[in-house]
Length: 264
Image 1 (cartoon, helix red, strand yellow):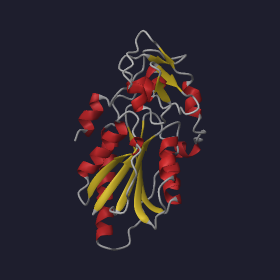
Image 2 (image 1 turned 180 degrees about the horizontal axis):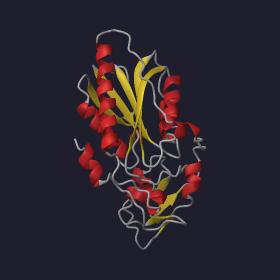
Image 3 (image 1 turned 30 degrees about the vertical axis):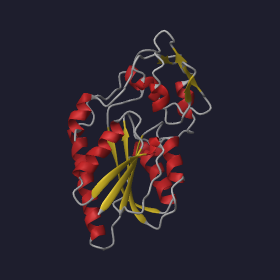
């Protein structure tokens, strides 16, 4: 059996979790595809495809949805959805399931994993959740992977694969999914401290929406920006700032405690 996980990770948390899944699944060889790199997805060799993303304003990001919408139609190819979240998961899994199903996949299961917060406003507000996932959440994650193995075993045997469902709690059901431009408005205009900026180009390279150009300092095209905070978080000199946040709340890479829990 062969599996593929197509993932979008802004901070590295989701990528780390996907690597953990790939390393612990026993019934299939699992490859990973970083959709932020713009690579085409050849799904033909795979028996099951996973779709993974982080929660962005209570739903999946615009980049993830664009990727899924651009995939060729399928005929009930097995799939699962997975997301990471810092504070609340919102309707991320439900929106992902609908988007993936609309492309002809048969989504048989899903899971949400609590991870440290990568959204600077939440970190500054003291809700960084640095200890996530806790022991209970790690056990639930392990149970999800074990169930994924059982799905793959059923598929390999040629029998009917039973749908496990995509769980979403009551609170998350009640939360709305704002327009994808809401994150951009929440972040606001980006500024550059030219005294700190070294013109290294990291911000332009990590921007998944190609909204930043160097001229020679970074220039942000706000019509393309979706407020993912990658430029803010990843600037090595902390030269990028907003009207409300400057030099604080950065999350440039996965927290060391998370790396210890999900290290592979």
